Length: 239
Image 1 (cartoon, rainbow, N blue to C red):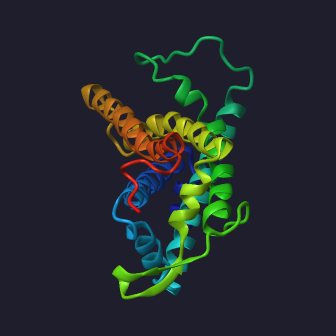
Image 2: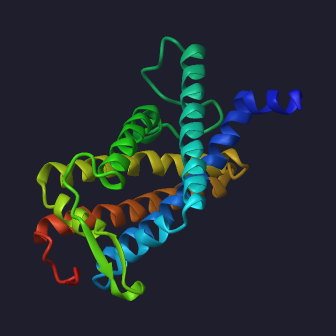
């Protein structure tokens, strides 16, 4: 066991665990986007989706605790790797290059620590904003006829109301744009840390990472942008 823990704490071990937690978080983002897009479904779809999550009871708390652990562990690993590199190269470099071939250094890779910190802070705000409604008045409750007439929080109305505010809508869009940077390099780094690092395979993984990050985040960005531009009355929003 001590040798296993030592291996995890090594630079290589931390990179592997960063990759594993990163892939887990990417899978979560895919599921989260799928749920968020139900806001463009029938009028009760989004509230049914959120109510279903709440109805999980203790299981939801276990899932949330697991996600919190993944996010925090991923952040701690990323910061520790960055600090180790800073310690090894305290002077920094004016020119980025590698000995073994073309460098994978880019704006995305060099800004990982900063975009990661911004995303972590944003995540706390996002949870407080919509899960707990601390920064805006709650929109009350709604009767979900399609779920058997149960009463649920009208989170759909809150989301639509909040994304009509310029500061909220474009603040979310700005942070989500930074997520494209973080995710594009992070997805490539995650898979190369797990062995996909050679020749054409690495190039294909890098291209796939860029496409994945852009498509996924454009899906997230579309929601506040569409609601803001249509004043919450667009044809995709059913009433």
